[in-house]
Image (cartoon, rainbow, N blue to C red):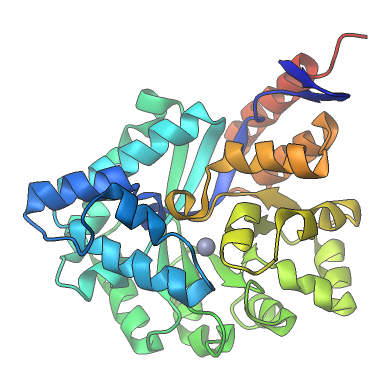
Length: 343
Ligand SMILES: [Zn+2]
């Protein structure tokens, strides 16, 4: 523990990471080493030149680079290595449970077999508990800027191959691709017993949050920060305690908010929204979950009890078993005891 001015800072709390795209954990170093292993020519001379591209104007400018970099992911081992790197780093930053999204369509569309990407990620997740002390679940996310039929086709293939997925999500370019476009996909996922989540209200309007809840019957909203523009939506989210997986550093990098000082998270927490802190695409947005906490403490002065509330929200909003949730909530209680200054 170190003291800066009046404020006491500690290590980040134990959390569940609920909003994480595994492809967004590809660090420049790994991109270069996988490119070399697979004999792929990158359009960048070196890591520094690649890093310079990480200045984004908006969601689309990030997505362009994000999809381009995926070219280095070719073999099952590539997906396993990427996933292991994330788990190792996340564990070091306090992540104790992770619900990991992957974008199967982004790989299938460039000629990588569905089995290759799913099995590669799943292999790392299968030993994550032993290797890193992180329990995990895999979520297949679908690209909302592609047609619903493509998503339905991939979902059926995932079901046919008995892919170890716990649920489905919806990501990529939000504006102009409302949740209602995917009604059949979510109905099918529900019939198959899968959990349902969706990105809504990041760049898109608050009405997309309502659509995701009422038409797609999602249990969690990824991002959701633009709910703050609609009082009725906020009231509903508070009343129903719908989990919102907020990603502060991502919102700053993609210009959803100008700077962290302007981020609505403190207000969202204060008015009783069920918010948690997540990293989204940590390799691209300047930080993992613990980096997000650290910045929030620095910029917004989040107290130990406030951080504990965010951590407990993440655990309660997860799809982990009740037993695992109880175990992790106990860890949060312990963390509070260790983090508060002695009386
Ligand atoms: Zn996301």
